Image (cartoon, rainbow over the protein chains, first blue to last red):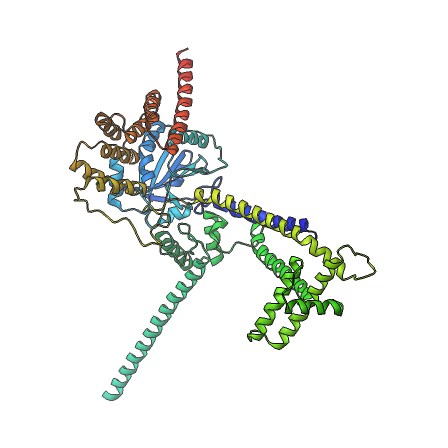
Length: 189
Length: 419
């Protein structure tokens, strides 16, 4: 075999391998791409903090903004004020905000709601069943559901105001986002 | 009569006890069976909040809930395949520890086998080549040359090519090893024959370097040619190896720092390798520098609660400490209280107008308030005039550029609105 041919073979094998390895380093090993976007939102019944329950099916015809949160998670705190402000801006426009508290204790969760003066509906997902149903792997995670009960957008991590309004508008028009959003998030247990 | 009755009663009791224990046993058996089935399904699912753990192995809350979900589903009569399909519909194929043999997943199943086959085949091929090369009987060398080689081994020879000298040296070492008892007689004979023949051939090539007539020494000329070309080969190999090493090093150097980040506790391994965490400082301490240092570390480790307590304690010790104020502001900002954060930053800046942390935080707060972008820019411009590390400077610079962009858009929108 000619030396250059041998060299070519070695490079031909090694370069893709190194490239593959390098690509692996750039990826977030925790990230799990969601298969739920564009699919019907999994139904659930959420027991609310103020008594009563909220059934997702009853919200057909409205855009639903579902946010999974915990009081111990800094990015959840960072976005809390923003979510409440967005809710106050959009309420009455056939938009429903729904907070789902998970992996938390009731007392600090209630304190969190008081601290940020949150007025939209919030409930506890005991046993993480709703969270599993939505394929949650980090916190906070946000889903937007259009009038027909289809998930149009998923975001992991803290949101910013412009994104919230843009995605609510898209959900209102039934536009499904091709890509998931990502911000500062925490791992759950 | 009484004995008969009592015996009947006894039998009845015995029977009841037997049936009862049987029922209990089957119940326990069913429970164990269910657990085993749960474990079997859970072992095939990847825990979504862990790394490289199955749902069966993980102690996390999420995995525990998943196991209880599987148990509930099994008890409700759902088949294992349906349960797996449920998890796949929520988390995608990602959740399966063994990917299905379809599409891209098939590649994962086939590639290792192909790789192993190619590797084994390649190894076998190379080994066969080596074996053949080793086994080639030493090409016949003429007796005169052999005699010369033996003479050279015996006495100090000169005027040899480097290769010839090397071979002669090798022969000497061989003999030494043989005498020292490190080589068996058989091995010694065989190796000596090979070395001697090679040395003789090298000698012949040296004597008649230009005699390349094909009629004579067909075995000699190619060898001589190869010997002449060998250094060129090696140079190529060295260059290739060096290039590969440089490339590999550059790739690692570029990607590793990007992917490695600080874990909780401020260390890359989280104290796993060294077993050292942060030595916790009691909150009652009055040691101001230590409080500030630990607070900063807690902040870096994202332990905002502890950082908050530490800085609050620092302010109890010295209420007029500007840096502690600024850090308190940064924590409040992260905790979603920009208004309170702003007042802390202002207090810190009143004490020390050029405090970098306070300038940075104040800019962040102002940037989030509609209509205050201009003020945020001015604050950050003051910050940029301070003594900053290069990294911080770059970061502030990029944020500032973004803010200026936004200000431009805002003024444009305002102009449009006024028209």
